[in-house]
Length: 243
Image (cartoon, rainbow, N blue to C red):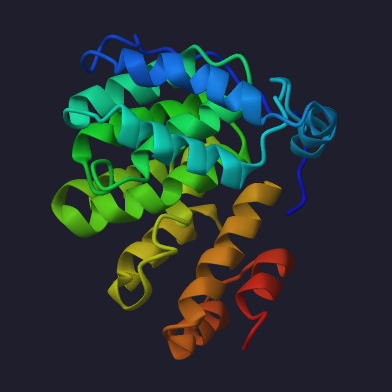
């Protein structure tokens, strides 16, 4: 994926103590565990690739995920409130990008998947992370929330598809990537259509990606949608890539 402009990595605006009490033992163990797994020689290259103003430790993403899973087993969470508080504290207090990845990965767990209480954290990630790796990591969590409570999530995603911040619009557009046969095509159309004229690369790419993914399930619907709408060349090329 083409990456334009610097990753902003803005500080969080929510209080880490807001949702509950964080899992202090997990947080205390995570820092040393990531430091011991770091490959310092890779850190600068990782930051350059991601155009990140926040430095990297040099820990590969699969290693971060394994570390998070292992420490969560060693220091289990009492419930979604503690998970939310821990993820938020880790996100807002991060000094290195891998810590923010770890915060997101905490939510990709049996306790976190489909948990509505984590929606405010996802909004913090999108609004303060301001980069594609963060947004694309929380998008699957939005899909789980949508499947669990369509009455609440459909209006929110439609609202986000018109958000002044294009990262929220990207999140809405790609929110159904994992849905497959459960994709709500009316919702998919509703979040794409307000963004068809947007010239932002990450929006045009997201539109093409969302359509290309749904084409794996319903190619005829995607062909009809593309024929009926004036997509940008990038969005059209991506949407029809495998058709």
